[in-house]
Length: 137
Image (cartoon, rainbow, N blue to C red):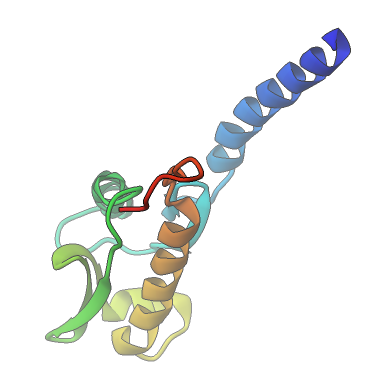
């Protein structure tokens, strides 16, 4: 029993140390939701640096994790494509973003970013499972 507890504690400690270290090794501009790497922002936009764009996304995302289901939508705004989460602006996909990643247009890149965000939210949604016999709300 004591050996099992020691191994469990060592595993937990290793997981806690490796998680932040792995994120620190991500390239600059990487959008990470939960533990899921979504995509990289490579260019500034609207007076915001690459890091400010990433921070904006990562400041909004926690409000929607673990709560009610979320819906991502893409809406065209000029040559840009805005990705919204439950109707709230999340990120603008610009022609410069598309060029930096080898896509012909923001309209071609936006669905890829949206799918990456959807996947990250599904995999990161930490919703507790109710005990057996209790109704699900």
